[in-house]
Image 1 (cartoon, rainbow, N blue to C red):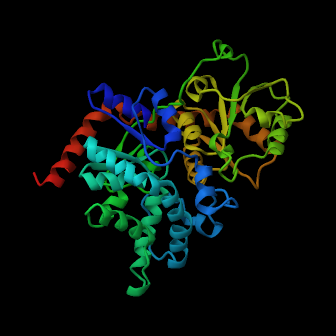
Image 2 (cartoon, rainbow, N blue to C red):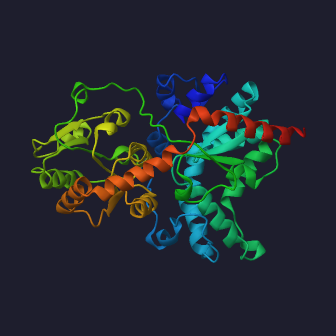
Image 3 (cartoon, rainbow, N blue to C red):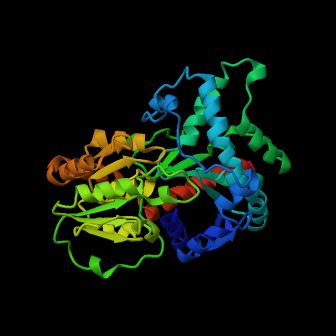
Length: 420
């Protein structure tokens, strides 16, 4: 979102970035204007306040019985999915997160939007409060998709399955949530508010999981926050450089889906004699738990990927959007240790483009990582596949080139709302 915000500001538009207060520093560091909304507490604190001190961590796990079809690419016909399964997924996995993340942001956000009167509200795919506020003040609104729009897919699955249910058995918790806020602000419920009027997607067209009926394409531009180039990056690597990173999967309020420290150690031991420079991002407290660090390994607490990736020959990551998209636009072969929710879909992309390999956590062993990394470095087909994927990504308009299209479609929806 940051490169697009910069592009809009550079074109003369006013931009405000609304978020929980704890994220304000990240916004202002990006040179953007922040609007704090909601309570000044962390997600972990909010979970404990709402659910009690014994609250479980947020889990990104999708039950095995749903994963077979949930991540199929494209707009395949998805008729006939069992009501019990899709209603469970919507009501148990998605809706609780909706109200925990959004409920306490809505009123502050609507108050600000009534004062500031935005023409367009761009919403992260989990920022449902933005859609409510946009509808309340008559702004155009769109979903910003940095990878797979799982919510939109599950929502469409739900609505199809709902039509097969008896009239009295069509409970819809998403509609209830949106309709409650719509009534508060004098609006009627509309499915358009739930799905967005259009979407902005940074993925190449053929790799979009569930495209919105009206999807605008924009190139992914990496942004990693405040960045400093370390001195060791100021010269070309003497050996192939491999990055291993697991990003947000290490956040304390999320059930960890990435490697355990024991698996990290096993990986380091297994690649210790390879002629590579392994750069591992690991917090200091976890580094201290390692028993040994091989000579070919450099451990850093953080290094901005946008200054590191151009010098890498391969990337090992958990399937997060930053790791995948960053490697994609740099044309680097990838090994995904499947830890993110939608890593299954990314596995499909790597397989069909030849841009990399993947392992589930159940398949993981240190020797297997060694084998796959060796293949990524030695087999030319992976570099060729990564370059093909890169070209698909670069064929999309940059944020600067995209602004005029965003201006046009915003004017269209604003005119529709005003009746002009």
